[in-house]
Length: 129
Image 1 (cartoon, rainbow, N blue to C red):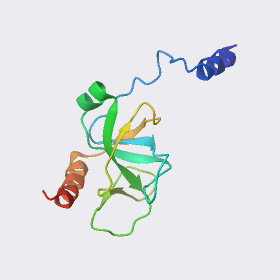
Image 2 (cartoon, helix red, strand yellow):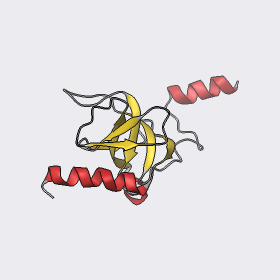
Image 3 (spheres, rainbow, N blue to C red):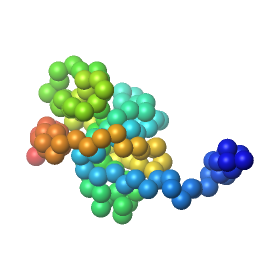
């Protein structure tokens, strides 16, 4: 019976009271659905580093984030990140503003503020800052 109700609520897109309570915060590492993509954009369901504040997410339902990849090329905008199962880098040159609710955000772990600072330090010169 429980399975039937769960399936019915998913079919009808009924929110469960315990679902989507998570609100992403700066330095969180989350799973996030980056699809659909166009051109050379990074896609798939993959980890991302949150750059925006929890207050921004609460007010807008959006997050500002950079994708995390296990494809390490040694580029100037790659920032090494610890705490994941495989060696990974944050793609600091790629910044997305996305709906965390519609993109299946799930918390993995928390990164250090120093990683966020390093991502921002590599991003700002690209924007003329």
